[in-house]
Image (cartoon, rainbow, N blue to C red):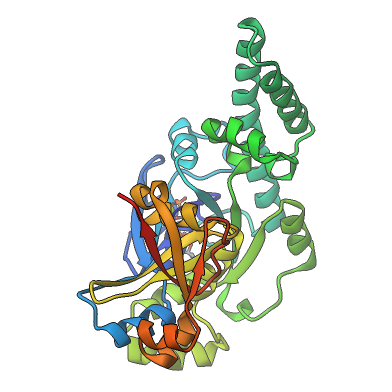
Length: 348
Ligand SMILES: Nc1nc2c(ncn2[C@@H]2O[C@H](COP(=O)(O)OP(=O)(O)OP(=O)(O)O)[C@@H](O)[C@H]2O)c(=O)[nH]1
Ligand SMILES: [Mg+2]
């Protein structure tokens, strides 16, 4: 999963990136040239994988991973840079970093609501440009009438300054538009980057409702301190979090919010070769989830043998689970659930 960090110059994108990844990319307003990016991979902590791994002692233990991309250049500057826009289009999800702290390098104080509105406006304009071009082309070439009508609806919605996340699209329509990489259709998460002393304050009502209207969630954190704590030796961190009144580190909170936003659940596989977490879309039927592992398994799907991870850890082996009636045999209609340990049977 690839999440792009976007936002106004000096909002703290690189600091958030460091806090989330534990890396040390250079921060400071204007430190990076527009269009450049920092990439970092984090593994998603998962106690279920650890417990399964302790049971099987596999050759390999694999956690889910999220790639963060810190996109320098900033929004909120008229004529959003082409390079920035194109990089944003490559992302599976976007995370807007919003400044809610005083930055001495900037002339203006924080205005979180305006940052939200401006990014929204910019991405709507960028999408409108694409949708209008596509519509013109479809009309000229007498394209698929279904797609023409869909593109007309999309243009009308964007012209009302609404992002496409709030346009009702059925599955077929979603497939039709998926190739355009519309920015306002990508899942969006917001990070409210607050001053250290404000980290336990609730998110202001106006911002929370702006987020709800855009069909997104908002995670408050204080990136500067989280970054500094994240760079300390692990055993010293707890003390600092406690002093700040922070119960759960930013990285953990952020990843949980991202999974929820992207509607991902975790399927598990376990055995002597590998114990592994697989993020799959909630509501995926067994063959589709199997396709995450390998397209051959999806194609040749016969059945799925499913054990709840808690049962497997408690009873200690697949054989014991089978005896205790805790191993279910499921067919191709089965919807994989969060925490299922799955063994697929398939034809090659
Ligand atoms: N007080 C405070 N300062 C912060 C916080 N987060 C970032 N800063 C400071 O704000 C400045 C800009 O942060 P960056 O993370 O470099 O901002 P950016 O969004 O990457 O900036 P550009 O890459 O230039 O667009 C740096 O001097 C940071 O130290 C915060 O939570 N609190
Ligand atoms: Mg930066």
